[in-house]
Image (cartoon, rainbow, N blue to C red; front, side, top):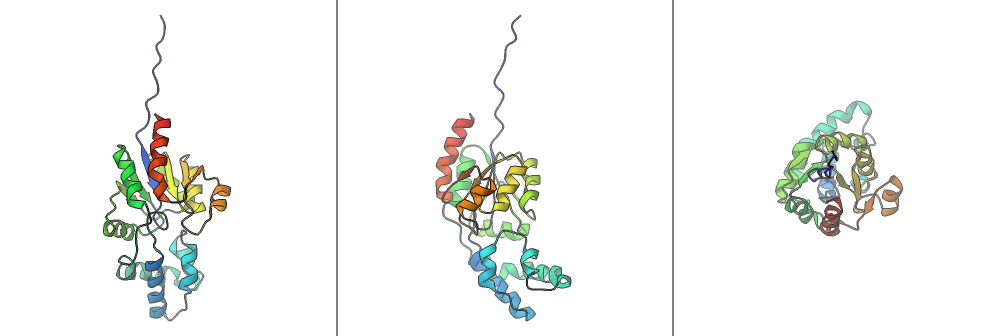
Amino acid sequence: MAVMSFPTAVQPLTVGFDLDMTLIDSRPGIHATYRALSAETGVWIDADLAITRLGPPLEQELALWFPDERVQEVSDRYREIYTAYAIEPTPAMPGAREAIAAVQELGGRAIVVTAKHEPNAELHLAHLGMAPDEVIGWLWAEAKAEALREHAASVYVGDHIGDVRGARVAEALSVAVPTGPCDADALREAGADVILDDLTAFPAWLRNYCADRA
């Protein structure tokens, strides 16, 4: 008797997005928060410089300005005052809302996986009217693979080489946008599979990706 074969079912679409400098331009709010923290603690923080290297966890930046024994204390304080200084002035990146909507309109799930303090990430998204299906915070670089695997994400979109590394560890397609501190060459060298100029190009790319995937 002949054995019939059937095509393998395609997994439901889940796309992960980074937050800072991918979905939101967090530079104005972070700049204001660093200035407020500097004024409160009396310790100089070059906010202009700090916002050029967004991506890694807050503690890594504050360790450049404070002694090790104070880093956790001032990190906690930064997160406390962040909501007063950072939410209102932070805009969405061009195409961010449309990128999330494009995933959901295709019947997929859009998740945000970020190194940011999760409650603050949720405040940003709510303030800007973006409604992903899930928000997961406190994960950076390779650690982002934990959430991407848990949610079976096949694509991860980010602006930093750390996002590329997270996608690769999770065996997800790395889609990179050079809208943050890393340029296209750096993202390509880190192993990004796809590089888009910004998120305005994402919906068309996603439709083609889904057509090929089907």
